[in-house]
Length: 206
Image (tube, rainbow, N blue to C red; front, side, top):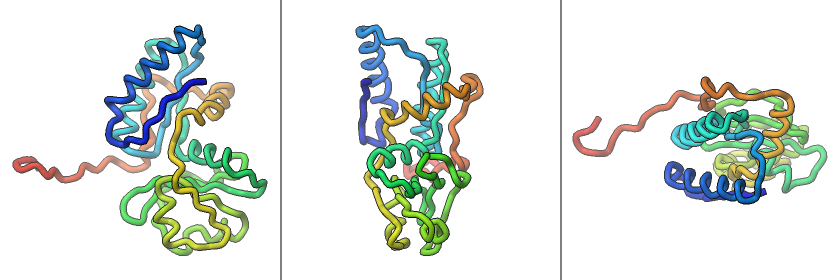
């Protein structure tokens, strides 16, 4: 397996084509067969999702291989699962949204979703029901602000975990084997909420 990773959040359009070219060159040199293209489908950054999905669709179409979308929250849960081995634990990945809002979903220890993906406004009682029954690993970019309002002893925080494509393999393989392939022509990112453009700060633009 080979991978490339950057923690830059502002340089998707410049870094992604370079990484793709490097990995495709490596695959050709080692005579690796590429079975499918997997991509993070969201929720997440509007711009980042558009760039990632557009690139993945182009690759899948050009190589005539399947496209598989992987939920970003489930990917975060899968990364945490590799780091915490506890049979009864559940996972609560959180992607930071505006103010005290996060995008989230609950997963059991088998990474099976227990709720719908939702936008949640955090308060001290937000996760009381599950925290009363399970240790809960809260992860992702929304975990830090969650820790300021939810202090239950069953809450375990791993705020440093971010999406990483090398952990996507097993999730994508499971979907591919189950025949859950995306329609390349019509596949779109899962934004959860409609894009809202911020007002321009450049004089003369509105």
